[in-house]
Structure formats: C-alpha cells, structure tokens
Image (cartoon, rainbow, N blue to C red; front, side, top):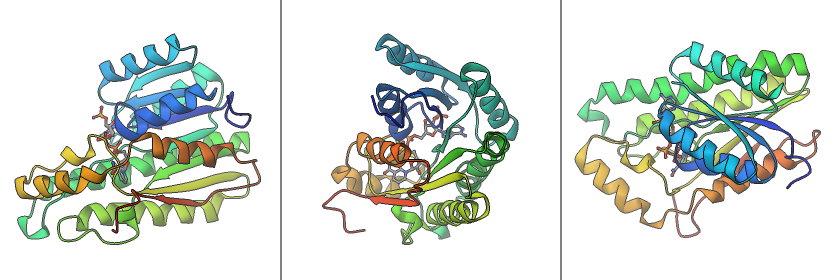
Length: 247
Ligand code: NDP
C-alpha cells in the first residue's frame, strides 16, 4: 500500500494490455480503486477478476476513445462506482509506423483519432469533475517520439505524441492551480504496440528495435511515483527508456 495512492480513484484508458494493464494492476496493488477502459471487454473483465481476487478494487467499461460519449460514460461510471475521480490516465494509443510516401492515410487518421483526439476527449470528460472537486491529476502518455521525431517511418506517430506533450503542458498551465498534469515519455516498452503497423518492412524494423524493450511495469512504477507525491507537487514530465536505447 502507498499512503498517497491508497483510496484514490484512477481511470485508465487502454487498460486491456501493455502499459495500461500493468499500471492498473500496480496501482490496485498499492490500494487505488481502478477503472479500466478499452475496446476488448473480455480482456478487461479478466484483469478486473484478477485484481479483485487479489483483494484489490477494480471495475471496467468498454470504451472506444475515438467516441467522445464513451469517455463521458466512462467518467460517469467511475463516479457512480467509487464516488469521485482522482486520476485520469489517457494512455490508449496506436503506433502505425510507415514512410509518409507510402500514404497509409487510414493509419494516419486512426493515430490522430486515438492518440490526439482520444486524449482530448479524456480531458473533456474528466476536467469538469476535477474542477468541481477542486482536485485531480491528468497523466497523459506521450513518448520519446514526442521529444524527437522518429524518422523515417514514425513521423505521423511522432506528430501525435508531440501533440500530447504540447496539449498536456498547456493544460497544466491553464488549469494547474489545483489540478496536476504529468506527461510520461517512455522509450521502447514491451507491449502489443509494436504490432500496430500494417506496413510489412516497417513492422519488421520495429520488432527488431523492440528487442531491447523494458517491461511495462517500468512505466507503471513511474506513474505511481507521480501519483504518490503530495498534492502541492506536480511531477510535470518523466522520460524513461531502456538503458541501452540511444533514441
Ligand atoms: P498496447 O498496444 O499494448 O496497448 C494499447 C492499448 O490501447 C490497448 O489496451 C488497446 O485496447 C487500447 N486502444 C487502442 N485503440 C483504442 C481505442 N480506439 N479506444 C480505446 N482503447 C484503445 O500498447 P502500449 O501499452 O505500449 O501503449 C500504451 C500507450 O503508451 C500508447 O499511447 C503508446 O503510444 C504509449 N507508448 C508506448 C511505448 C512502447 O514502447 N510500448 C513507448 C512510448 C509510448 P483495445 O484494443 O482493447 O481497445
């Protein structure tokens, strides 16, 4: 258990695998009440069962972050289940790597919809609750690709992750009086993300690059660190990557 995490209500998008799943499990083990969201409901339910069986508090709701009403329902579900929302983790994401000249415009659209608009809809849903409570914490998942352009192949993905960083910092500036905002920028982390590209050559290169990936728990621990700080301390950004990764 952790003093500043125990009892907090934490909503996590993209919680059916990877960083989101790992973060849900870790925070629940530290005493948080976790609300999991993603599209694959069966996976969410299995994770909730595990957490509950281990004595933790968890609930799940199927949600597609590209649909604003799903995020509104998710926050309402969290409030109905646990009475409030302390932390909103905008984590759901897609990494579809391919050279721009391949013009995989459908994948660009999906990344923009999930990685940028999904984060915005999460902010729009949780912010009124945070303002009413006069407290809350946004944790938005950007990437090292949001600090340096991952090119060739990752230009659009990088664009979405730069956007997350920009929006997060602006959000912190605009609403920061009693609401905390943290941006997490991980390097290669082992998850299903590396399978997001439909472009064969890029997909092979990504999977090679991910051989040095670190476990998703590394990010879960960084997120816990940001949450457990006292209310007057806002950890603005955390960059973490495999020791051996230069990019
Ligand atoms: P995963 O592919 O394992 O997880 C992505 C999660 O997002 C899944 O739970 C997926 O669930 C969910 N998701 C995807 N699309 C939607 C949607 N439309 N609506 C709701 N949920 C959706 O990858 P990671 O855990 O690695 O990725 C999590 C975040 O971390 C992403 O934002 C990613 O960009 C970021 N990141 C990851 C890094 C890495 O190396 N792994 C490095 C830097 C950043 P479902 O399919 O069930 O909806």
